[in-house]
Image (tube, rainbow, N blue to C red; front, side):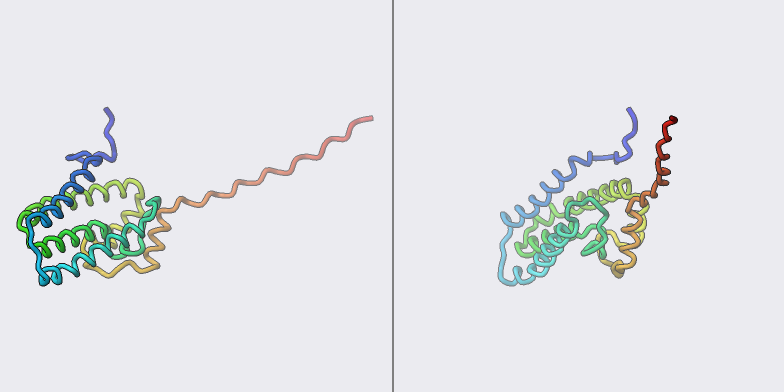
Amino acid sequence: MPEDPEAVPGVPVGEMPVAWTLLVLGCAAGALLTGEFSRFTLRLAAPFLLAGGLLALASVRAIGRGARLVTHGPYRWLRHPYFLGVLLMIVGAIVAMRSLPAIVLFIPTLRVTLVRARREEHNLALRFGEAYEAYWARVPFILPLRPPLTSEAADAIAALGQPPPAEDPVPDPPPAPPAEPEA
């Protein structure tokens, strides 16, 4: 059986979204079912919930249909803003509800999220090649620890991902005029 270039050892990529979704839902459900909130904890959690929700929404909006490498919006700051947004919302729910079981579930959720992000990077590198390598070198993984991409850098990276322009074929010579019939 030939080696699949997209194969990564471990859990099959198709099963990652299911495991990740179940863990995220488990954290939220654990916080809601076992936690107890107060006005103070809601105020403390509100920035996490708001920032995470807005970041996840902006990430989904920036991706659009996902047919090209996205280097604008929150993707100028980090390679995985959607995952960071979801993690911030989970932290907000845990803080708001003061839930110990949700904290316990957060640890495997964080691990699966990081594994999923690394696998996504692998697939993006296969799909976009040199353009993704340039993007990877300039933009941090999941925490915005460096300045964002400039517009010029984002345009240069996007240009790497474009197929080379098709060369204009040499035009065919005009057809020869019809020969005059002999009398």
